[in-house]
Image 1 (tube, rainbow, N blue to C red):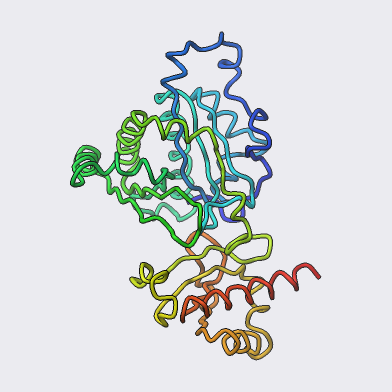
Image 2: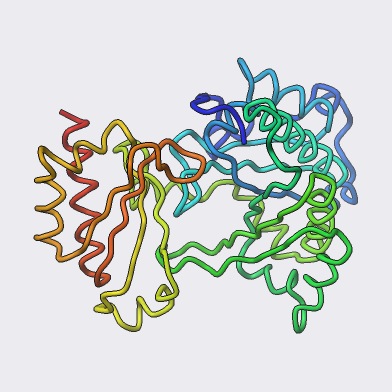
Length: 325
């Protein structure tokens, strides 16, 4: 959605949460009452690294402006801290619900404006937002027999879809809630979802830990070694654990375009060796065919779960070893 290649070191992870406060107006105010504290909430959603750089702005000017105008606090995970299974950073917006909604609106507005500029105004008005919600809180959004989520869809006119939990990342207790629509539809849907989550005490407590994903860096997708996002491709995903030898398992990972030659090798020798040793079938996308929102080439690995794991490991080691030399 935002400018490709935007990079920034303006981060707010668990090491520096006090580094970027809300607006000066807020910091000079008297301590909020307990009632005010109880009304605070947080929302997390995903941004590509380019979008994150755009929201941060030069020297942090844009994010500071958004915090000042909204009264909410905006934090981003570090450059190499992505939501598991993606190449996307996490942004967390915190404060009273009205302030949070103002900040989210500012962020989405900016990204929408830039998408029109980048693509010559040829972008449709509907886009998607990926909210990060604890698995334990998703039931409240769904409701009995799907009644709550259906009412949210009818009210907002946005598409709302809750993705299944990704079993490829042990200990990950969050799921993605996809909201698709115009900006107005998205904002109404987010308002309804946040209002529901505010009733969930477990959700409110869980938001005290902004970015608990650092432990996943480098497992299957970390950018330091040039290997990107990892995505199960097909309907056999749910069978992976019950039948690890199912040869129809398929996963696509991203490898930085400038490093894809390390995986291919001269005359394709490296990729052939990886395929022969692991027993997996490996297909690399054509030039210009990238993972959505990135400049990473698609590497599709098919075979048993054991073969896929071995091939992934060999690819990661090959890229990392050469890049470190």
